[in-house]
Image (cartoon, rainbow, N blue to C red; front, side):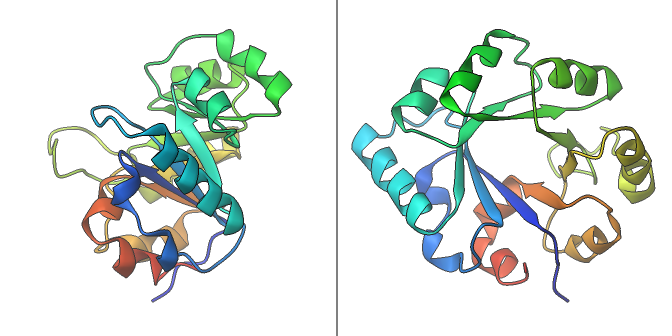
Length: 190
């Protein structure tokens, strides 16, 4: 079964995590570059950014305003732990600000940060923390009544991809699933 949404967010930790040749649809995909451990050369990042532009893929940098400006990215991604309001000064660069949240209090703060889209976690159970709670489809849809700009994140895998058709948001975000089987997932998205 295929998944039809308007926006797909892929969170990658290295530019090697995803092959842009697999992405054929234009204007639906966004890549959030969240470099925690890897040190990648600026020239490689600039080439990756250039390829994203050619394929009409939005490119965001996580929690690093200097790198976002240097790469001329489409915006910046503010993770849930990032509580800085300095990000509001980036609006002069025409950046779109994306944030992530885990509860209603964090959603409210992300609105104060100027986030146009908020990735809301966790939709499903995750492999790395079986005891952590998850929202599920019904509870997530109830949160959408409060804020329509929520995008589900967390626990989404090839096994539960079909459930996303029941989620009323305009898209979804993938983190670990895009590293494991990127081609299998990308081929099911429209």
